[in-house]
Amino acid sequence: MTPTRKLPLFLVSGASCVGKSSLCEVLFRREQDFLVLESDLLWRKEFDTPETQYREFRETWLRVCANVAQIGLPVVLCGCVTPEQIEPLPERALFSSTHYLAAVCSDLAMRRRLTLRGVTDPARIESSMRFNRWLRENGETTEPGMTLLDTTELTIEEAARKAEGWVRTRLQQRPRRCCV
Image (cartoon, rainbow, N blue to C red; front, top):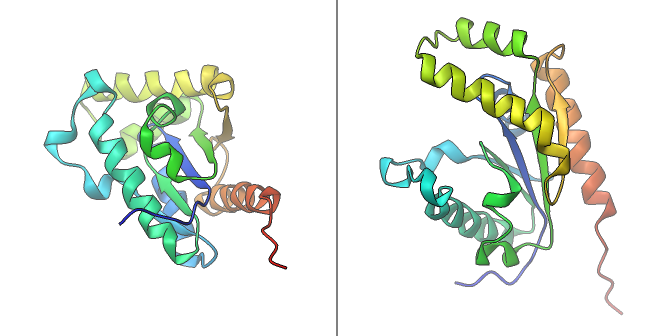
C-alpha cells in the first residue's frame, strides 16, 4: 500500500543516556494528538551498516511511519539520527515535512549518566560523547536544522514538556486544508 496522506514527521535524536528515550516514553504514555515510536524496536544485526548510514534501517522506518500516519496522526520517531540520513532517501517524499529535535547535555552530565547506567565499554562511552558533542556543535547548522534541547538540568518530565511544545508549535504552523 502506498501512503496517500502526507503528514509531518518529527524525529527526536540524541546520544545514549542523554534522555531522548525517557522523554519519548513520557510522551508515548500521555499523548493522543500524535504517535510516538522508538526506532530501537526494529533494530536487527542486519541493519548495522554505518558505511551506508544505516540506509535500510532508515528506509524501513520511513515506510512504517508513513503507513502509520494514514490514521491521521503525525509520528514522532525517537532514535539516533541526523538529517543527512533521512533527507536524501526516496521515502522522505512520503511526508509533508520533517522536523528534528536533538536532545543534548554537557559532557559532565553525559559521563555521569553513562556511569549511572553502568556503561563501562570505553568505545561506547567515547562514541556517545562524540555524537553528543557533534550534535551540540553542528545540529543547528544541518539541513534542515535540528532544534537543540539541552537536558543537562531538566527532569525527564520537563524535557518531555519541552519536546511536546516543540511538536505542537510545528503542528500549528502546518497549512490547513480547506474544503469548499
